[in-house]
Image 1 (cartoon, rainbow, N blue to C red):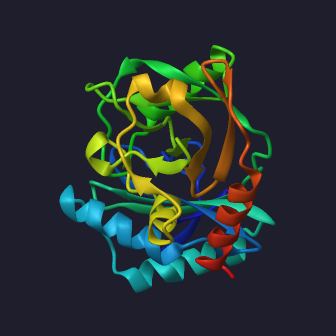
Image 2: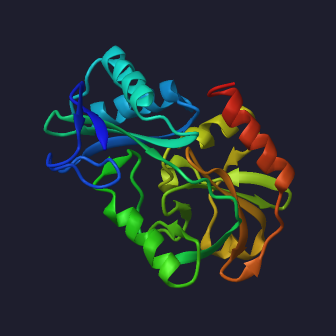
Length: 250
């Protein structure tokens, strides 16, 4: 696989790079959906990455250098639908990788993750803790899991943001409850489709409909939580997907 490593187009073989476009060590990263070589919301992702890198004192190259690298890798490795991963290591190395992505087209059966975990407001790697939550859910027969913080408030999904309809209102956990400031989450807040409000474990039984949000999934409807069936709000899902295109490649 070809990648951009520190501005150079190289083969990933034998360079200590992990599978799926990860640098070794630790740092911050962004994962971005691409359609016909066009990245969704690239500017928003780079803005978020720079804020995280600044907060964690991680070096980042100039924005123009990153954009040139993105154009180069998309020209070299194009897919009808792809996953662009951009990583910035604490050691100063940075990586841009582009891989094929198969879209999720089914609704999710979701459980509550059994451990209480406080979230992180920066998108950091290694990402193993979050991926482990996802893998544990799948091993238990679910598609994903919701994570609660140590105050027993829902923060987000394993690798997604979360929105839920309660008493006719669409809400999403606030950043203060451990939610990552996700790109799609931000777009929905800007367009007044959701409001920020805490969701406790006790509120689970009052949720009538829900979605998992991410830059790859965009908006995956939730079929059930802990085995309790939910309504599939397909009209809202279509509206969210349309916004993703409008703010990205449309």
